[in-house]
Image (cartoon, rainbow, N blue to C red; front, side, top):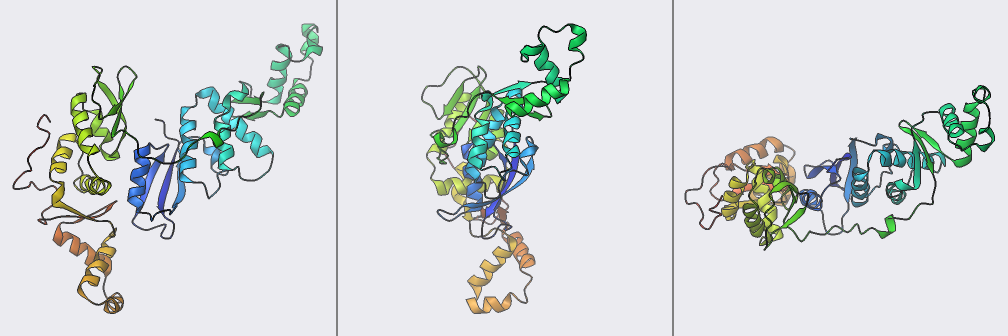
Length: 371
């Protein structure tokens, strides 16, 4: 999936805290859900969003309003990523037509409508009025000049012809050519369901024959997997690509399907804390998940220090102590002592306080032996 832009997400009341997510759009459903897990939002709370970078369609930068919603922005990026070369030029032309109306920032629903209506335009590979005028005159769009001798034809003011045609049909020039709308736009935005839902699958694979496979599945195809398109654990998407046995992927998906939301959050934190990058290690960590503890309220060494102080002394004394204690340094010392790690999901500890990736003395039974 071609990425269009990058956004920074955080809690609106603490936009630059340690609880944040950096996300490329368009994002898959599980990538969106994972980003929200990192933010730890309250129910009904909308995230703070800041666009960091455009990988394409940079002309949108001055046009998007500051209150663009995550799901709307993702829907726009999703459609833009699907456009072919001609449709991209058409979209840029439609945007320029909206800009020419001088009505200020373009609302997100309108931009989405434009992205869905790129086939409502003609695109011509001409860069200016002069070449547009010649193109129209040579191709029968100016009936008055059709019977002129060649020598007289070359004396025509093609720039004037092109300028009058462009103004009359409200066309625009883009860097890639001339765009003119030929039919009315359809209202696509109002038909979209932007509600974020957890998919029915745990893993979505693209097969080598171009088909798609949702896992877990009772009946598996003979066609081998090509790449992972979405996974309940986005961190493992790359690891899925290297597994060519769909049965192994299916068994792992079956395990994931039995996990609660809290277990999954803890598991993702464990995978991050241990820097896990392969499926075999991921399975081993899943079999020992009960040995790990996650505190979602702690996002930094400073918050770890405050939590420890609140545990040891009265709340009023903590407020006084903060004036004299180097909280970040104290927090780092606490984390190092306990072999704890701050992950994007919170503080992660082992129940034996050993380093995160240390081998357990008694490995759990019932793992995925075929891995």
